Image (tube, rainbow, N blue to C red; front, side, top):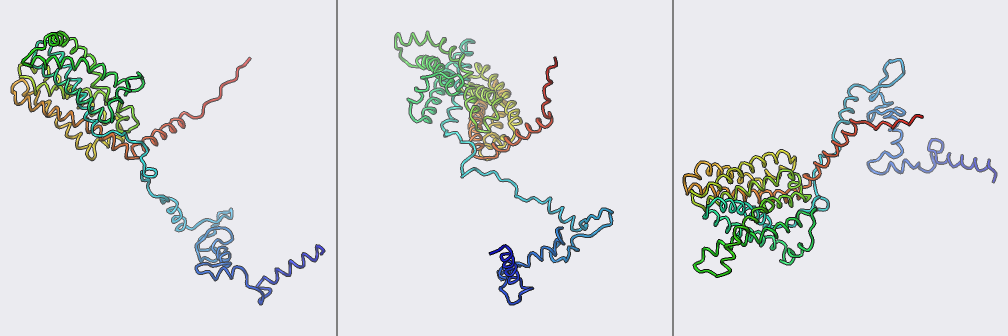
Length: 421
Protein backbone atom coordinates (compact mmCIF):
# COMPACT_ATOMS: atom_id res chain seq x y z
CA UNK A 1 0.00 0.00 0.00
CA UNK A 2 1.32 3.34 -1.02
CA UNK A 3 1.26 6.48 1.08
CA UNK A 4 -1.45 7.96 -1.17
CA UNK A 5 -3.72 4.94 -0.73
CA UNK A 6 -3.37 5.22 3.08
CA UNK A 7 -4.27 8.92 3.09
CA UNK A 8 -7.32 8.35 0.87
CA UNK A 9 -8.49 5.59 3.20
CA UNK A 10 -8.24 7.90 6.19
CA UNK A 11 -10.27 10.54 4.38
CA UNK A 12 -13.01 8.04 3.59
CA UNK A 13 -13.19 6.98 7.25
CA UNK A 14 -13.49 10.61 8.31
CA UNK A 15 -16.29 11.30 5.84
CA UNK A 16 -18.21 8.23 6.98
CA UNK A 17 -18.10 9.38 10.59
CA UNK A 18 -19.10 12.99 9.85
CA UNK A 19 -22.90 13.40 10.16
CA UNK A 20 -22.84 16.57 8.00
CA UNK A 21 -21.24 14.73 5.06
CA UNK A 22 -22.74 11.31 5.66
CA UNK A 23 -26.21 11.64 7.34
CA UNK A 24 -26.80 7.92 7.14
CA UNK A 25 -23.51 7.01 8.70
CA UNK A 26 -22.84 5.81 12.25
CA UNK A 27 -23.68 8.18 15.10
CA UNK A 28 -20.93 10.39 16.36
CA UNK A 29 -19.37 9.71 19.73
CA UNK A 30 -20.80 12.89 21.23
CA UNK A 31 -24.35 11.74 20.45
CA UNK A 32 -23.74 8.57 22.38
CA UNK A 33 -22.45 10.61 25.27
CA UNK A 34 -25.44 12.94 25.02
CA UNK A 35 -27.67 9.97 25.78
CA UNK A 36 -26.26 9.89 29.32
CA UNK A 37 -28.70 11.75 31.58
CA UNK A 38 -27.39 15.09 32.84
CA UNK A 39 -24.69 15.54 30.20
CA UNK A 40 -24.46 17.51 27.00
CA UNK A 41 -22.03 15.11 25.34
CA UNK A 42 -20.44 16.40 22.21
CA UNK A 43 -22.60 19.52 22.33
CA UNK A 44 -20.75 20.58 25.49
CA UNK A 45 -17.84 21.71 23.35
CA UNK A 46 -20.12 23.97 21.34
CA UNK A 47 -21.79 25.20 24.53
CA UNK A 48 -18.39 25.98 25.99
CA UNK A 49 -17.47 27.88 22.87
CA UNK A 50 -20.69 29.86 23.06
CA UNK A 51 -20.15 30.69 26.73
CA UNK A 52 -16.51 31.63 26.41
CA UNK A 53 -16.78 33.27 22.99
CA UNK A 54 -13.62 31.61 21.82
CA UNK A 55 -11.55 31.64 24.98
CA UNK A 56 -12.87 34.29 27.46
CA UNK A 57 -15.15 33.38 30.34
CA UNK A 58 -18.84 34.24 30.21
CA UNK A 59 -22.13 33.23 31.74
CA UNK A 60 -23.89 30.04 30.76
CA UNK A 61 -26.16 30.44 27.80
CA UNK A 62 -24.64 33.73 26.62
CA UNK A 63 -24.11 33.46 22.87
CA UNK A 64 -20.76 34.67 21.88
CA UNK A 65 -20.06 35.58 25.49
CA UNK A 66 -21.79 38.94 25.08
CA UNK A 67 -23.53 38.68 28.44
CA UNK A 68 -20.27 38.03 30.22
CA UNK A 69 -17.89 40.42 28.45
CA UNK A 70 -18.17 43.67 26.59
CA UNK A 71 -15.82 45.58 24.37
CA UNK A 72 -14.77 48.96 25.62
CA UNK A 73 -13.05 51.49 23.43
CA UNK A 74 -9.78 51.71 25.32
CA UNK A 75 -7.71 51.84 22.23
CA UNK A 76 -5.91 48.57 22.96
CA UNK A 77 -8.74 46.28 21.84
CA UNK A 78 -9.02 44.73 25.30
CA UNK A 79 -12.18 43.07 26.54
CA UNK A 80 -13.19 43.83 30.10
CA UNK A 81 -15.79 42.23 32.36
CA UNK A 82 -18.97 44.06 33.15
CA UNK A 83 -19.13 45.62 36.57
CA UNK A 84 -21.80 43.30 38.00
CA UNK A 85 -20.11 40.10 36.91
CA UNK A 86 -16.71 41.37 38.03
CA UNK A 87 -18.03 42.17 41.48
CA UNK A 88 -19.59 38.73 41.76
CA UNK A 89 -16.35 37.03 40.83
CA UNK A 90 -14.40 39.14 43.30
CA UNK A 91 -16.82 38.25 46.08
CA UNK A 92 -16.47 34.57 45.20
CA UNK A 93 -12.69 34.82 45.32
CA UNK A 94 -12.79 36.26 48.86
CA UNK A 95 -15.04 33.56 50.26
CA UNK A 96 -13.47 31.03 52.64
CA UNK A 97 -12.97 27.81 50.71
CA UNK A 98 -12.34 25.61 53.78
CA UNK A 99 -14.02 25.62 57.19
CA UNK A 100 -12.26 26.95 60.27
CA UNK A 101 -9.69 24.56 61.68
CA UNK A 102 -10.77 22.39 64.57
CA UNK A 103 -8.10 20.94 66.81
CA UNK A 104 -8.55 17.19 66.93
CA UNK A 105 -6.07 14.52 67.86
CA UNK A 106 -4.52 12.14 65.38
CA UNK A 107 -6.34 8.81 65.43
CA UNK A 108 -7.94 9.79 68.73
CA UNK A 109 -4.57 10.30 70.44
CA UNK A 110 -3.41 13.57 72.03
CA UNK A 111 -0.51 15.49 70.53
CA UNK A 112 1.33 15.34 73.85
CA UNK A 113 1.24 12.19 75.93
CA UNK A 114 -0.25 12.98 79.33
CA UNK A 115 1.75 12.04 82.41
CA UNK A 116 0.68 8.61 83.68
CA UNK A 117 0.18 9.92 87.20
CA UNK A 118 -2.90 9.45 89.35
CA UNK A 119 -4.37 11.18 92.40
CA UNK A 120 -1.53 9.95 94.64
CA UNK A 121 0.86 12.40 92.96
CA UNK A 122 -0.88 15.68 93.94
CA UNK A 123 -1.06 14.32 97.50
CA UNK A 124 2.67 13.64 97.27
CA UNK A 125 3.21 17.22 96.06
CA UNK A 126 1.15 18.74 98.86
CA UNK A 127 2.62 16.67 101.67
CA UNK A 128 6.16 17.31 100.46
CA UNK A 129 5.53 21.04 100.68
CA UNK A 130 4.06 20.74 104.18
CA UNK A 131 7.06 18.69 105.30
CA UNK A 132 9.62 21.16 103.98
CA UNK A 133 7.92 24.20 105.51
CA UNK A 134 7.37 22.42 108.83
CA UNK A 135 11.07 21.54 109.15
CA UNK A 136 12.04 25.17 108.58
CA UNK A 137 9.53 26.36 111.16
CA UNK A 138 10.59 23.66 113.64
CA UNK A 139 14.25 24.68 113.41
CA UNK A 140 13.32 28.32 114.01
CA UNK A 141 11.15 27.39 116.97
CA UNK A 142 13.95 25.26 118.42
CA UNK A 143 16.51 28.05 118.18
CA UNK A 144 14.10 30.67 119.55
CA UNK A 145 12.88 28.65 122.54
CA UNK A 146 9.30 27.72 121.52
CA UNK A 147 8.97 24.06 122.60
CA UNK A 148 5.30 23.55 121.77
CA UNK A 149 5.67 24.95 118.25
CA UNK A 150 8.90 22.96 117.79
CA UNK A 151 7.28 19.72 118.84
CA UNK A 152 4.25 20.17 116.65
CA UNK A 153 6.30 21.10 113.58
CA UNK A 154 8.80 18.27 113.98
CA UNK A 155 6.09 15.65 114.32
CA UNK A 156 4.16 17.20 111.45
CA UNK A 157 7.26 17.13 109.22
CA UNK A 158 7.81 13.45 110.01
CA UNK A 159 4.20 12.53 109.30
CA UNK A 160 4.00 14.64 106.14
CA UNK A 161 7.17 13.24 104.56
CA UNK A 162 6.05 9.71 105.43
CA UNK A 163 2.69 10.24 103.68
CA UNK A 164 4.47 11.86 100.75
CA UNK A 165 6.81 8.89 100.31
CA UNK A 166 3.93 6.43 100.64
CA UNK A 167 2.01 8.29 97.94
CA UNK A 168 5.05 8.22 95.66
CA UNK A 169 5.60 4.50 96.20
CA UNK A 170 1.90 3.87 95.60
CA UNK A 171 2.17 5.61 92.25
CA UNK A 172 5.35 3.72 91.36
CA UNK A 173 3.61 0.45 92.13
CA UNK A 174 6.47 -1.31 93.93
CA UNK A 175 8.78 0.03 96.69
CA UNK A 176 11.89 -1.35 95.01
CA UNK A 177 11.41 1.08 92.13
CA UNK A 178 12.23 3.95 94.48
CA UNK A 179 15.35 2.12 95.65
CA UNK A 180 16.37 1.46 92.04
CA UNK A 181 16.34 5.20 91.33
CA UNK A 182 19.14 5.59 93.91
CA UNK A 183 21.51 3.47 91.83
CA UNK A 184 22.53 6.54 89.79
CA UNK A 185 22.69 10.29 90.29
CA UNK A 186 21.80 12.29 87.21
CA UNK A 187 21.95 16.06 87.74
CA UNK A 188 20.00 16.76 84.53
CA UNK A 189 17.04 14.68 85.72
CA UNK A 190 14.69 16.34 88.24
CA UNK A 191 13.37 12.90 89.19
CA UNK A 192 16.86 11.65 90.05
CA UNK A 193 17.76 14.82 91.94
CA UNK A 194 14.41 14.79 93.76
CA UNK A 195 14.91 11.18 94.82
CA UNK A 196 18.25 12.04 96.40
CA UNK A 197 16.79 15.17 98.04
CA UNK A 198 14.09 13.07 99.69
CA UNK A 199 16.66 10.48 100.71
CA UNK A 200 18.88 13.13 102.31
CA UNK A 201 15.97 14.91 103.98
CA UNK A 202 14.12 11.92 105.35
CA UNK A 203 16.53 10.71 108.10
CA UNK A 204 16.90 14.13 109.76
CA UNK A 205 13.16 14.78 109.74
CA UNK A 206 12.38 11.32 111.09
CA UNK A 207 15.00 11.47 113.85
CA UNK A 208 13.81 14.91 115.01
CA UNK A 209 10.18 13.76 114.97
CA UNK A 210 11.00 10.51 116.76
CA UNK A 211 12.78 12.44 119.50
CA UNK A 212 9.66 14.55 120.10
CA UNK A 213 7.43 11.48 120.15
CA UNK A 214 9.79 9.74 122.62
CA UNK A 215 9.56 12.70 124.99
CA UNK A 216 5.77 12.40 125.03
CA UNK A 217 5.86 8.74 126.08
CA UNK A 218 5.48 7.95 129.79
CA UNK A 219 8.54 5.67 129.78
CA UNK A 220 12.15 6.15 128.76
CA UNK A 221 14.19 3.73 126.66
CA UNK A 222 17.54 4.31 128.28
CA UNK A 223 20.42 4.94 125.89
CA UNK A 224 18.10 5.13 122.88
CA UNK A 225 16.10 7.99 124.38
CA UNK A 226 19.33 9.77 125.35
CA UNK A 227 20.72 9.44 121.80
CA UNK A 228 17.48 10.77 120.35
CA UNK A 229 17.57 13.78 122.65
CA UNK A 230 21.16 14.48 121.67
CA UNK A 231 20.56 14.07 117.91
CA UNK A 232 17.25 15.96 117.74
CA UNK A 233 18.66 19.44 117.19
CA UNK A 234 21.39 18.51 114.63
CA UNK A 235 18.91 16.33 112.75
CA UNK A 236 16.29 19.08 112.78
CA UNK A 237 18.76 21.68 111.47
CA UNK A 238 19.99 19.29 108.76
CA UNK A 239 16.41 18.70 107.65
CA UNK A 240 15.75 22.45 107.62
CA UNK A 241 18.73 23.03 105.33
CA UNK A 242 17.35 20.59 102.75
CA UNK A 243 13.72 21.65 103.27
CA UNK A 244 13.64 24.35 100.52
CA UNK A 245 14.64 21.70 97.99
CA UNK A 246 11.88 19.41 99.21
CA UNK A 247 9.31 22.19 98.86
CA UNK A 248 10.40 23.29 95.38
CA UNK A 249 11.82 20.32 93.47
CA UNK A 250 8.36 18.92 92.72
CA UNK A 251 7.58 22.05 90.68
CA UNK A 252 10.79 21.54 88.68
CA UNK A 253 9.74 17.94 88.16
CA UNK A 254 6.42 19.06 86.64
CA UNK A 255 7.82 21.83 84.45
CA UNK A 256 10.50 19.54 83.00
CA UNK A 257 7.77 17.61 81.14
CA UNK A 258 6.21 18.52 77.78
CA UNK A 259 2.80 19.09 79.40
CA UNK A 260 1.81 22.60 78.19
CA UNK A 261 0.33 24.06 81.40
CA UNK A 262 3.32 22.87 83.44
CA UNK A 263 6.10 23.63 80.97
CA UNK A 264 4.83 27.14 80.21
CA UNK A 265 4.96 27.93 83.95
CA UNK A 266 8.58 26.84 84.41
CA UNK A 267 9.77 30.29 85.52
CA UNK A 268 7.19 30.91 88.27
CA UNK A 269 5.84 27.53 89.40
CA UNK A 270 8.76 26.71 91.79
CA UNK A 271 8.17 30.02 93.60
CA UNK A 272 4.42 29.34 93.69
CA UNK A 273 5.07 25.96 95.31
CA UNK A 274 7.52 27.42 97.84
CA UNK A 275 5.03 30.14 98.80
CA UNK A 276 2.28 27.56 99.05
CA UNK A 277 4.44 25.34 101.28
CA UNK A 278 5.22 28.29 103.56
CA UNK A 279 1.54 29.22 103.82
CA UNK A 280 0.53 25.62 104.57
CA UNK A 281 3.19 25.02 107.22
CA UNK A 282 2.50 28.40 108.78
CA UNK A 283 -1.19 27.56 108.90
CA UNK A 284 -0.38 24.23 110.53
CA UNK A 285 1.69 26.07 113.14
CA UNK A 286 -1.26 28.37 113.87
CA UNK A 287 -3.44 25.31 114.30
CA UNK A 288 -1.08 23.42 116.67
CA UNK A 289 0.70 26.09 118.72
CA UNK A 290 -0.72 28.47 121.32
CA UNK A 291 -1.00 32.15 120.52
CA UNK A 292 2.03 32.97 122.67
CA UNK A 293 4.32 30.82 120.50
CA UNK A 294 2.67 31.16 117.11
CA UNK A 295 4.39 34.41 116.06
CA UNK A 296 6.89 32.78 113.61
CA UNK A 297 4.14 30.61 112.15
CA UNK A 298 1.88 33.62 111.66
CA UNK A 299 4.59 35.62 109.89
CA UNK A 300 5.60 32.67 107.70
CA UNK A 301 1.96 32.06 106.76
CA UNK A 302 1.31 35.67 105.74
CA UNK A 303 4.55 36.03 103.76
CA UNK A 304 4.04 32.68 102.04
CA UNK A 305 0.43 33.44 101.15
CA UNK A 306 1.27 36.85 99.69
CA UNK A 307 4.17 35.41 97.70
CA UNK A 308 2.01 32.60 96.36
CA UNK A 309 -0.80 34.90 95.25
CA UNK A 310 1.52 37.46 93.66
CA UNK A 311 3.68 34.97 91.76
CA UNK A 312 0.66 32.93 90.70
CA UNK A 313 -0.91 36.07 89.21
CA UNK A 314 2.27 36.75 87.27
CA UNK A 315 2.46 33.11 86.19
CA UNK A 316 -1.03 33.16 84.70
CA UNK A 317 -0.14 36.19 82.57
CA UNK A 318 3.16 34.77 81.34
CA UNK A 319 1.90 31.29 80.44
CA UNK A 320 -0.01 32.39 77.36
CA UNK A 321 -2.75 30.21 75.95
CA UNK A 322 -2.17 27.30 78.34
CA UNK A 323 -3.28 29.51 81.26
CA UNK A 324 -6.84 28.75 80.11
CA UNK A 325 -6.43 25.32 81.67
CA UNK A 326 -6.12 27.02 85.08
CA UNK A 327 -9.43 28.85 84.63
CA UNK A 328 -11.80 26.24 83.22
CA UNK A 329 -13.44 23.08 84.51
CA UNK A 330 -12.42 21.40 87.71
CA UNK A 331 -8.88 22.87 87.71
CA UNK A 332 -10.39 26.36 87.44
CA UNK A 333 -12.66 25.72 90.42
CA UNK A 334 -9.72 24.43 92.48
CA UNK A 335 -7.52 27.40 91.62
CA UNK A 336 -10.29 29.89 92.45
CA UNK A 337 -10.91 28.11 95.74
CA UNK A 338 -7.18 28.17 96.54
CA UNK A 339 -7.01 31.93 96.00
CA UNK A 340 -10.04 32.61 98.17
CA UNK A 341 -8.90 30.28 100.95
CA UNK A 342 -5.32 31.54 100.91
CA UNK A 343 -6.34 35.20 100.97
CA UNK A 344 -8.89 34.53 103.73
CA UNK A 345 -6.40 32.56 105.80
CA UNK A 346 -3.68 35.19 105.45
CA UNK A 347 -6.10 37.97 106.43
CA UNK A 348 -7.29 35.99 109.44
CA UNK A 349 -3.72 35.18 110.50
CA UNK A 350 -2.74 38.83 110.23
CA UNK A 351 -5.76 40.23 112.08
CA UNK A 352 -6.78 37.44 114.48
CA UNK A 353 -3.79 35.09 114.70
CA UNK A 354 -2.14 36.99 117.56
CA UNK A 355 -5.37 37.58 119.52
CA UNK A 356 -7.69 34.63 119.31
CA UNK A 357 -6.84 30.95 119.50
CA UNK A 358 -9.98 30.08 117.56
CA UNK A 359 -9.27 32.71 114.89
CA UNK A 360 -5.71 31.42 114.51
CA UNK A 361 -6.91 27.84 114.16
CA UNK A 362 -9.55 28.71 111.54
CA UNK A 363 -7.00 30.74 109.62
CA UNK A 364 -4.60 27.81 109.72
CA UNK A 365 -7.23 25.43 108.33
CA UNK A 366 -8.01 27.87 105.51
CA UNK A 367 -4.32 28.15 104.61
CA UNK A 368 -3.88 24.38 104.57
CA UNK A 369 -6.93 23.92 102.38
CA UNK A 370 -5.79 26.68 100.02
CA UNK A 371 -2.37 25.07 99.61
CA UNK A 372 -3.93 21.69 98.88
CA UNK A 373 -6.23 23.24 96.25
CA UNK A 374 -3.23 24.90 94.61
CA UNK A 375 -1.34 21.62 94.23
CA UNK A 376 -4.36 19.65 93.04
CA UNK A 377 -5.47 22.46 90.70
CA UNK A 378 -2.06 22.82 89.04
CA UNK A 379 -1.79 19.06 88.67
CA UNK A 380 -5.21 18.65 87.04
CA UNK A 381 -4.68 21.69 84.80
CA UNK A 382 -1.58 20.05 83.41
CA UNK A 383 -3.43 16.82 82.65
CA UNK A 384 -6.24 18.74 80.93
CA UNK A 385 -3.80 20.75 78.81
CA UNK A 386 -2.12 17.56 77.61
CA UNK A 387 -5.47 16.17 76.41
CA UNK A 388 -6.38 19.29 74.37
CA UNK A 389 -4.26 19.62 71.17
CA UNK A 390 -4.74 23.38 70.87
CA UNK A 391 -2.46 24.08 73.84
CA UNK A 392 0.35 22.46 71.86
CA UNK A 393 -0.47 23.41 68.25
CA UNK A 394 -1.37 27.11 68.61
CA UNK A 395 1.79 28.18 70.53
CA UNK A 396 3.94 26.26 68.05
CA UNK A 397 2.33 28.12 65.14
CA UNK A 398 2.77 31.46 66.90
CA UNK A 399 6.46 30.77 67.54
CA UNK A 400 6.94 29.73 63.91
CA UNK A 401 5.20 32.87 62.63
CA UNK A 402 7.31 35.10 64.87
CA UNK A 403 10.48 33.43 63.69
CA UNK A 404 9.48 33.80 60.05
CA UNK A 405 8.57 37.45 60.59
CA UNK A 406 11.92 38.08 62.25
CA UNK A 407 13.75 36.40 59.39
CA UNK A 408 11.77 38.41 56.83
CA UNK A 409 12.47 41.66 58.68
CA UNK A 410 16.19 40.98 58.89
CA UNK A 411 16.34 40.24 55.15
CA UNK A 412 18.80 37.97 53.37
CA UNK A 413 22.28 37.90 54.76
CA UNK A 414 24.69 40.10 52.86
CA UNK A 415 27.52 38.19 51.12
CA UNK A 416 30.88 38.55 52.69
CA UNK A 417 33.25 40.91 50.91
CA UNK A 418 36.13 39.25 49.16
CA UNK A 419 39.53 39.99 50.47
CA UNK A 420 41.40 42.48 48.38
CA UNK A 421 45.05 42.18 47.93
